Amino acid sequence: MPNIQFRCPRCNQPIEQPPDMLGQLIDCPACGEVIEVQKSIHLPPPPRPGPRPVPRLKLPKPPPHAPAPARLKEYKVLAPSDERFAGGVTPAKLEEALNAYAAKGWQVAAALHPRHPDEAEVSRDDWMLILGRTK
Image: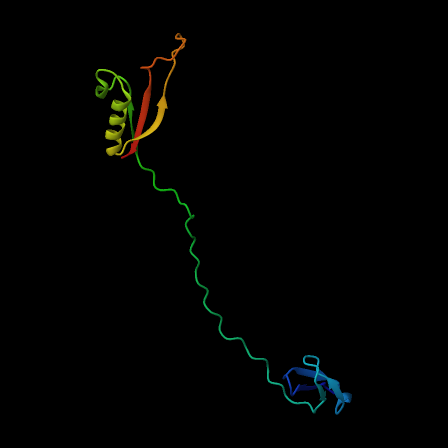
């Protein structure tokens, strides 16, 4: 004889018991309510899950700090021989020259003060500034 199938009247938990338990009191395994084993009833099948939602495509995200496209650079060398320093280099003339170049987008990229191997000291007039800007 098949097992008795019924539901707890309190929590609706499906329960299955052997036929010799008919009329006996048991504790519901889900809620603990004391219930009587009832005559077998046909339990409806569990509800079928609805249709699955269509998954959304996940496009790859660009890296948070993607490098900007490469742009061309140009450079200029500023030295004591520059025409702006005719008559000698002074701090005021150098400042004026740097500000004039900066107004055109130039920035100091490097400052060089080379020393010739055959000279013991660096010459005051032996320097170069490398200016750079993006085209």
